[in-house]
Image (tube, rainbow, N blue to C red; front, side):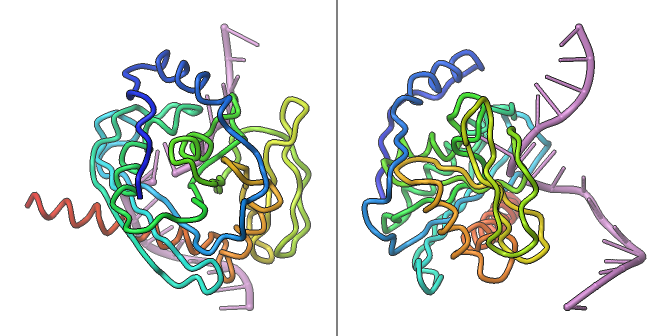
Length: 233
DNA sequence: GCGACAG
DNA sequence: ATCTTGTCGC
């Protein structure tokens, strides 16, 4: 698929904040235009240290049939993080390599399931929102741990959920994808509603805590990283 | 000022 | 994210 190269990559935090201020108004929370036929999972694996801008990274995208969860397409890319890990600026670290992987996809997915936050972000512009604007596609954020907000503990069963509130607004929902497991934090990215985002995450998680999209993308980017490592040796 | 902080 | 043994439970 093709992506729009909307902006140059920031070299420092101030530039990164400026880009977030500029792009945030473009985010739209809206019902899906049509029932998605395909879902894409995205993830990134790290090679070297732990937070530096020079860290080796591998990104992966896996496209699944929205109903059968059968794998339809996949792509990977290896590169450098290019930005240090700063909570709130996380997208600048993973997006370059993720975008390269997306461009190598033979197809265009209907929805992108991102590893991290969407609206549940200090400036309401997490990775899922950012990628949604750049790709012009519906996106949602699925995070294993929350970044901010307050919420009540959801019920113990699969499907139980509770809204996450921050600064007087609902920014996400904690969602139990299996009985008794720790809930995931789901938030809207772009061109989707929170209800639809949660429904899709639940549908993509028939057996494990994490959706099949992220599980498969996680495996694929780890493999890509290992393969890149021995390509050197 | 202090602590917390997606991956 | 990543480094890692044993251990509790279905």
